[in-house]
Length: 301
Image (cartoon, rainbow, N blue to C red; front, side, top):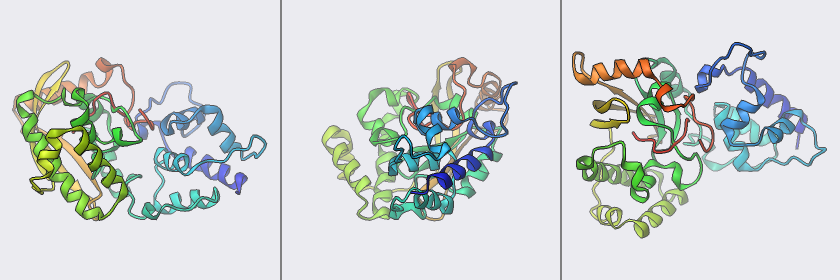
């Protein structure tokens, strides 16, 4: 393992990211142009001490990053596909087969669009409805997300296993959303083929949710591209919005953004949302740390 090169690579990737790009405050006393070490550690779900050892490139403490740790760092540092592969090579870990066209790091084209959508709630998710990145308004509208790893990272999984995941939608809309989520997951499962991640998720959902099992057996399929939603915001009440979807070329990621026609109550509420932001929620983030893009007490889309 080339620890010095690994450390240098992490350090240069950290230096190029501005705090605002990942939803962190700039702060008046920032001494580094990019992220601090502890901020990268937070975004990746690691301890600050562990990440510091990685950057120092010292083998003294036997630092051996796992594939899961490397994937978390690639996401936190917004590495593109080539950079992610390079990180794995430096750590002498096998590059996962899905690294090219992967759904575990944000595709640059979608991330570039997200960075330009500063006046409307927007986020990038995978085809399993895992939040990869979001702006401040999406966080303010939808709330933070609970997990960036494991099944709970998927909002579809939480929708059918955690009643609190449905709190941001009016109860009368729940049956429709259930149908839409399952039809969308059917399309994702077929697109991915025999992907073990999807296979395991479906098996668990069938066991844990009779509603999911019944809907899955209908074999209804439909990729979600446009939807009209009512979202229950804790401060502004019910907000009616149009949800737009832009899918990546391989269909494994999508950019979601929310709008309301000019002059409507929804448009007025979005204006208010841009004023109150995340202050009411006591949250600071735009891109949740691993385990917390902002990441999830009930993040909805």
